[in-house]
Image (cartoon, rainbow, N blue to C red; front, side):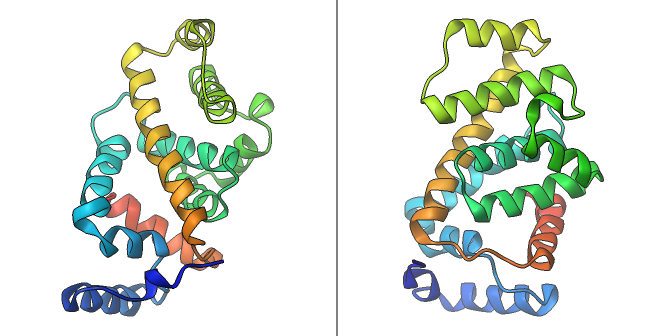
Length: 193
């Protein structure tokens, strides 16, 4: 059930921003945006900064790789809104929708490099089991992933594990393919701030 709190309680400047977004995108404002503007002092400002750093900050992982990580974490968490949003964003970032779909359908046979596959496998285990072992980490490092890349992947995982749970708790509305594509275009152009 979608919580009504996302439909009210915004400042006049935020309401104006939402109107501008709707006019230019010709799509509804995603609930993810509404959530970060609802209580910016409590959650929104910190969440935007952390997520932006995880997704767009300096990293050996490409933006497309990190968006794919977000989609994969969302898939493991079964978060419909976030799967749609980050599948669309990863697809646009890679310019390769079949590759993204293949990863989400069957990681083991998907056409991705082994460091990324090992990292996604580790993130999936962390989400599903709530823990990873030193053997799991050694496996990721043996696949050619650097310790810094592991940290960066864990930051993406943290950001989207939190967002997935909020999306499901608030009952985020699943957008149309056009809505997700519009949101992806925005995220690739401006990031998460």
